[in-house]
Image (cartoon, rainbow, N blue to C red; front, side, top):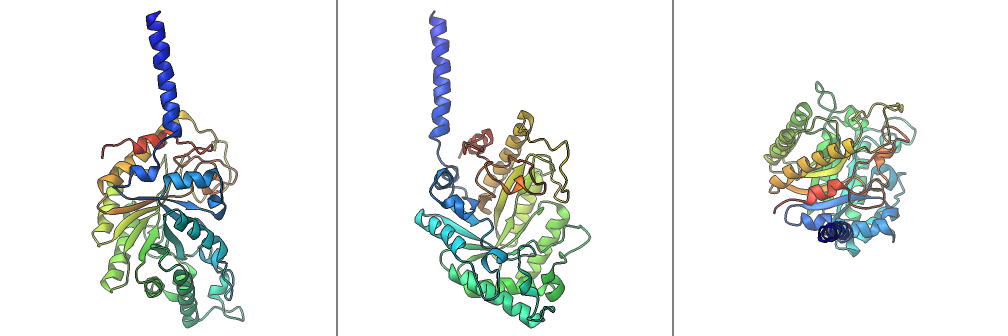
Length: 361
């Protein structure tokens, strides 16, 4: 009888203890307060009163606008800016003592075509395009001067192919590589106190890392105001990311005198195949125990490396709040549910969360 009572008591305490742990945990940012700032990308509806807003306030110390500060949403027409959605996110951050990262000022995607055309629909002249870039950056950065501490100034300028240097975007085709330096110079003019980042993905792959490094070193040697390197961190449980590869990226970019941040972290439970659009039978929407463990292991490895290099890494931003809604639910495959984050669809911490925060300071 005594043994039975002991077992039942032990089981009861264990169950209640786990429940208490799940409901009364410290926030993710609090665990890493002595290491780096933990942030999250949000949409305006995420910061409206509700359970998502409460999760944000508890777990994150920095916000990034997922979409509404990109050129197309915030500057849809040459003579019109759409400030309200971005203003809402910045106001929420200020009300709750959070930092804000701006994303993004110059990109080849989500940029309206009027940037690149004159009033007759012909290609804009070099002078007109540079003036528009300057006007856009001055307007956006200037509006949030003193409220946004860091900006992703140029996003994804380097080609994905190992034998090419620059991505052949309209910016590059019309201005050459000069547009990159100009964007940073304009941003620094608009807010001399803001930290200015170059942001890109696959920066742990040797060829791309080398090209990004070469570009940044050349710009810095010319005195271009660049202060940080953003490693996006869109990874997968199936990719070949290693601790050594991530460390090499962090230390190499830091050797340029740059602070390093992970700017768009998520870990997909599917192979990383961004060029495929059709849904296959293998695209199961089940978050299996095997996939869960692979995700736990990868998150643990990543955070072990980041904490090891806390003198070089100043921030980690997750790309979306929870598995309830993630951009990977529609990209690259529409209608394929993904589970890439540390909170589940009910906004509860996943097992990966507990592994990430289970470390000795």
